[in-house]
Image (cartoon, rainbow over the protein chains, first blue to last red):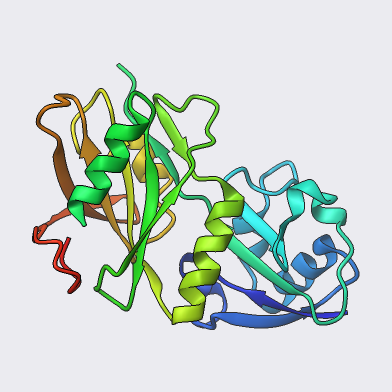
Length: 95
Length: 133
């Protein structure tokens, strides 16, 4: 299954500046593995040390947040668009 | 546009408000108010991922980028906290902070946060629809 993967600015250093790249896989996990083969460094930016999707990274398959549809095991269809968006997050200092 | 951000911050008080301003590079064109879904919304913010995707889709349709990422501090100054710096994932955007420490006198300041370094930027007030805040 070939999908288009949209890369956020902060991760384009791994894709030679490309805003979108193509990758293949039957699940989100397999797509991420192929991204890593083609663009080393991406997996560590997307997944946490325990192997799950990083808390401050959102992955969408078409319009759906994959956290609610099977996370890394979400099946991927030919022609899907996978978008990676870092969280808009922060907070005040405690004290 | 600064007035819109302050109004958003006031309407969410004491929770932190958050959102994006999209536009062509360097031009603030449209405010996207996002819902803060962090479990500790008085001290933290995390924009609703579904709304975030919708905002990015709309910006993509216009060929825009997130020009500004904004949020409020309700009990501390308008300066990026260590958490803000750690979670600043949009190096091309300006980070605008609205402080409501004194609710009668909101303070608004803008910064770039790149690889942990904070640089303050000038804010040109005006709200004239020509890219100025």
